[in-house]
Each structure stands twice: as C-alpha cells, then as structure tokens.
Image (cartoon, rainbow over all chains, first blue to last red; front, side, top):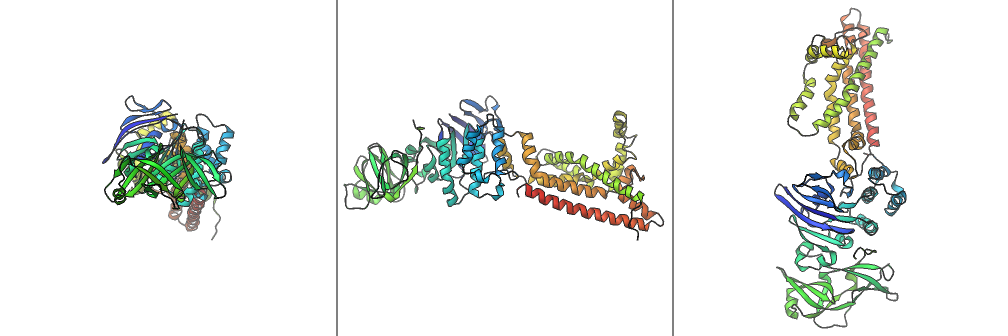
Length: 368
Length: 230
C-alpha cells in the first residue's frame, strides 16, 4: 500500500519540485493554495502528464522513471481518478458510465462488491438516467462510483467538492467518509479547504510554492505553529483524535476522551467507544493563568505553554501541551503580555462546548 | 403540365442518387481521418487544410480538368489503376462519383472537424484513467459524440453531390444512363428544342430533393443530440 512520488517539472514561470510518499491506505490530503501545483501532482501520478524528470511508484511497481525511460500509460496504471467536473460521458446512462471502468479493469470486482459500492453511494435509482438529468452532487457520486468500480490500486480525488454549493458539499462528505473507511487503497485528496481536509484526511501533504512544506498525520501538522501561515490563519486549530467515553443523557451532552483529557460536547449520535475526531479552532480557545470557575465554558483543560509564535499584527499563536495532547490558542499580544504568558508557563485553556467541531473518525485501525 | 417522369428522367434521378451515395460513402471514412488529423497540430497543417478546401474555391471545370489529366486512361494514375486493378473512371458513373466525392470532401471534413473540436478533451482523460486505449476511446467516446457532426457533413455533402455539374461533365462527359446525372439531364433538356417541360419537371425534382435532404439532416441531428445527452 504505497504511492511514492518524486519529480521536477517546469512550466512558464513556475517550477515544481515534489517528493513525498503515501505509506498506508486511508485519505492523504494534498493541501495548498490554488496554483500550488496540486492538480499537476495527481496528473503525474495518474500518467496524464509526463514531468521533465522523476519517478512514480505504486505499491513498489515503477509507473514512471524518466531516467530509465519507463512510462506506463495512464490506462494501464490502474489508478482511479475523480475530476473536479465529474467528466461523466454525456451519451451514456449512469449504468454505462459505471460499467465503463469496470469492464476494462485488469481484475474485475466481484459482483457483490460492485453492488455494495452502488448501494453505498446511493446510485440504485439513478442507473437509467443520463448525466444531464443529474444534480452536481449526484454527478460526483457517479464519478466516485465509476472510479471505484474500476477496482483501482489507488484513488485520486481532484477537489471533488469544489464545484458544488455548500449544501451539496455537506451531502457528499458522508459518502467520502464511507469510502475512506471502506476502501483498502491509498486515497489522495486534493483540496484547498482546511475544513474538508481536517474532516476527511488521515495525513496531510502541505504544498507551498511548488514544493512539499510538510507531511504527516493531520493532528501533528495542524498543531505545528510554523505551518500556520499555510494551514490557514483564521481556520487553524487543533485536530484531536478521541473516542466517546459516555453520554450524559440528562444534559443531552457527551464526554469525549482524548488521551487523559475529557471534552464535554453537545451529544453525538454514535455509541460510546466510537472513534471521533474533534477540531478546536485556535481562535475559539481562551487562556487563563488561574483555574477559573463561574463561567459557562464546560471545558477547562490544564496545560503547559509549549510554543509561542508571534506574527506581525496584534495576534500570537500559543501551543499548549495538555498531558500529551496539543491544543492551540490564538490570543492578542496585549493579553499575552498582560498575563505574562511565556514558554513553560502553566495555563488553563477554556473551550466552549459549542465551538468544538465533531466528525466521525476512521473506524478501523489504519493508524496502527 | 405533365408531372410524370419519363423513363429517361427516372434513370437520371436514380443515377444521381447512386453517384452521390457512392461519393459520400467512400469519402466519409477519409473525411473522418482527415478531420482527426486536422484537429492535431503539426508542421504543414495550414497547407494541408488549404489543399483540402481547394475544391470549394476552384471552378468545378478546373477540378474536372485536373481529374482528366490524373485519372484519364493515358494519364499516369489512370493508366496504372487500369493495368493493376482494371479500374477505369473514364466515361463511367464511378468517375462521376469520384468527381462529386472530391468536390464535396471539404464539406464533410469541415463539419466533422467542428464536431470533434467540440468534444471536451477531459472526457478522453477520464476514459484513459478508466483503462481505455486510443482505438477504444475513439470508438466509444469520440465517434458517438461526433456522430451529429458526421451526419450533418454527410448530408450536406450528399446534397452538394446531387448538384455537381462542371467537374462531372468535364471529366466523364454527358452519357445517358452512365454519367448523365440530374443537373446534366436538366442542362441537356434545356439545350434540346421542346425540352422545356422536361427541364421544369427535373428542376422541381431537384428542389424537392434538396429540401428533403435539409429537413432530414435537421431531424436526424436533433435525435442524435438527444441520444448524446445534450
């Protein structure tokens, strides 16, 4: 289970120098601003673009090696690709679109598995329709199904939600989460939306100005202060992997354990024991130098200041170590000097329950 | 006026339909190939494009003359075809079809090329990632999506072939039952004393044919577009 990519490619006034590897199944986000070369990278992996020089290996098999002249044609790479604009064949029904890749697969999916994918994506009632009679969200679901039914060894998703309005986006995300949890293949997910990335991805490859700025698990990358300018100042925040400890039925709340810490949040639907991912935006975290009481925030978490990043402007970003869990807070420089917050200082983080975002996490042990 | 066609006139009509059908059917695959070629960029494309379109701007009689000095029995290509395969275009309906096919070739190429250029190249990439090779993509994506344009080109070329006069009469002469197509029959009727009624009948026939062809192509193109999902 691996994709190894290393290449250099020059465009007019823009050069890409890329080197990273995806070592496990699950979703790896290729994250970066528009024009950072994300689509070029997956086109190189898919075989739709030949870089000036470089190598691409899929599960150890060389797909491209410009030095030795190996360049496996895109159609023989066995890599699924979902385009931003779906690219369904307009003259074929949904069924024919789905069959197109399935019929040409090197190894056809067993019928039961194929039916499972059709059901999972909710396509049973769309099969006889033509693409022009589908909504944008339905088109993307068909495109996902078409790629999955070709039984790919890896799946590339090029901003599959970018062309959809926010309602349709929310409608597709659960399907993507199911694909992430069911698929036993590496999935590369191109996105410039940190929201989508923190919700879906297990790992992130952060791109900046044509090269890889950082790679690693989402929780690690999102808690790195030095990457804040790239991971989105306003949206930046800690991503925490936890599980449901118990439900507080009388209060309609749930307790989520993240390591030794407990977050009390509005009740979630899943059962106790289920893995859950929390996202706490840095701008939603208050800091106090004393243990406070008599305030509405339900989550008061003790920690130590592990790092401070001052950028130009009135803000500083503070990274806390809360018994091994990283939490991020954005406060004003004024507050920082008033409270005397320096590295090593003991502080309490105050987090309102309503500002903790919760999304289902991978249910299997991909992390191990 | 008597609207009933004489056997000679019916013969001219059927000959015209046959000549045009042969012209279009033989030229069609070549036109698809030429259109595919012209959608790519390569050195000399502009020159090739000009050569393909030459028959539209050249006087038909010039085309007829060029065919005569190429495919005539003592001309190089004509003599070789006769010796090697026994194929003779001179004074034969096949020569009329050859002339009509070459003259109307640009109509086909033009319509097919426009249809090919309208196909989203992203669909080809999608088909490629799904395991389709070049021939596979051509058969399953390109051809069906270009079908309305190919049909439009074929119908236009057929209608234009029915009307070809100058190149045919120059190249293969005006032989009743062999090369005397509808326009040549009209011309002959006009030249013949007392042939006014026959000329009028044939002219009305020509108008009706052209009209039917245009309507037919519109209807067919509409249905093909529906099938194509647009």
